[in-house]
Image 1 (tube, rainbow, N blue to C red):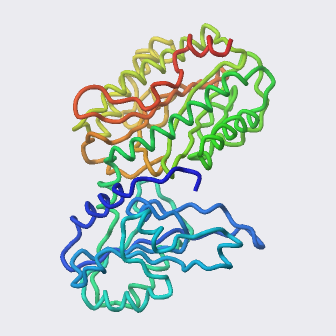
Image 2 (cartoon, rainbow, N blue to C red; image 1 turned 90 degrees about the horizontal axis):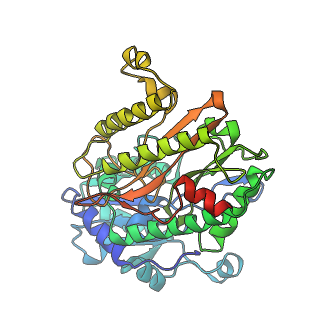
Length: 429
């Protein structure tokens, strides 16, 4: 891994919090992700399953975590199963976790090799009544691939059909949505790396550069600051491309007078950042571009103030809709007649701002969090309003990542990333 070691007390605390919500005489099992093939002997870069990482810090394939808080055998209350490393693996792939390194990473004392899984698991299953399985129930999930977790769940239920089954996901949704200070510091690091990439790009952009060249500048800065990749597929959308919300081709030339919408974030230690900025190719906004830009920025600033403990996500978006409606009236994009005849299920402002304003963020860019439950302190949210005007050939989105505070305004993790229109112009010139 490129990132610095994470204090294992984070993972010890996370397991303690999870175990406290398990039913009596139950176990919970978490699997690492597969390494996915491309073709022939090619594979995709490994990405650890965020749940086993959250609970153990283990960041390698073929790993299994078992939690059994009520085990009569104290050494079996927390167990890691790892692929046994050997000299051949060390030569061809590099060092894998040995038992001592696994303890230093996770704080888990009992480590078995994966080949002992069935034998140890049989003993454990005779001592418990319930098995927590880990299913993906995120509100945006749309998974067609059978995962390693899916295969294990199928095997476990067939092997031990008399055991009751419970779900880990509702517990994890709540735990992962509220961040420990160590996690906030890691997200801050990801945001700081994104800041360096953005400032590099401000000095690079000029008429006739290509979108993919801008993408490359970000990636260069991310890698040299210990990020392994973009936190998500980057959007570098010049001109009319900004009106395609998930534009990822990044293959067009940036022309003088256009704007470039950049939705880009670095990851660090598997934690995400998520930034949107919109800049002028020529270094200066036109009067109209700046009017729209400042309107978006005002909505972002006012929407941020609404992110307080107790707020309900759906109510928050209704209030942001009112803010955006007011700005669109001021820009002449809507008139009072549009508002009067609007469909309540698709308000008039949605013509120009059709996506949500905020989502949970953390180990996943669209992180865990139950949207029907009130917001809490130490949740991390994006704030990302936008105005998209195909008829005028540009779209603007601005986005910061903020931490909800117990009292007062949210803390902006992207407070040092330039965002004011005048500041953008000054830095570009």
